[in-house]
Image 1 (spheres, one colour):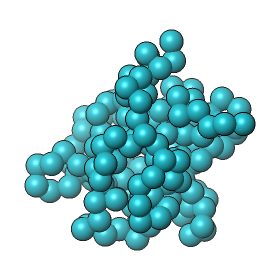
Image 2: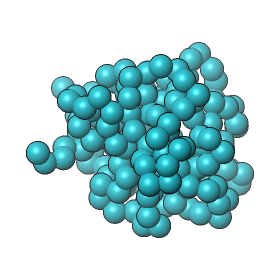
Image 3: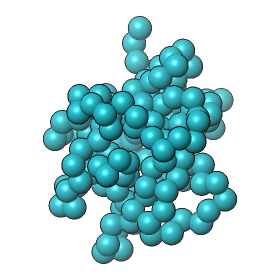
Image 4: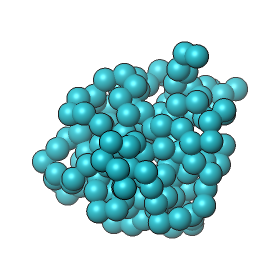
Length: 156
């Protein structure tokens, strides 16, 4: 089955919090699945995924703003940072947890309200694979189509 990048975008559920410089959030998509780092925190070869929202510690993502006024953030869980599985950004690159490196542009993201863009290449956003049919779905970096940046246009 071909991958369709419009199956889902990850959006933020802030639980009524403002966006401080350093806070934890549950990140969910429009279907109510949450970004989950449970497997990635236990196995270096596993990827971040979407799974049923349980508001567990593996679904709590620390959003830490990068200094310098760039509006970039790191997304952290289990003491590590979300990043592409390899040191490149290419279409359908899985997202995993890696040791945090404050100098790595690959570990920095830009949040624009309805998507998570890579700071290294803002044309790439965090997408999910097979959201409607899978219980747990890999999180991927993928090229953003104009409609992918606006979920209501992409889904409707």
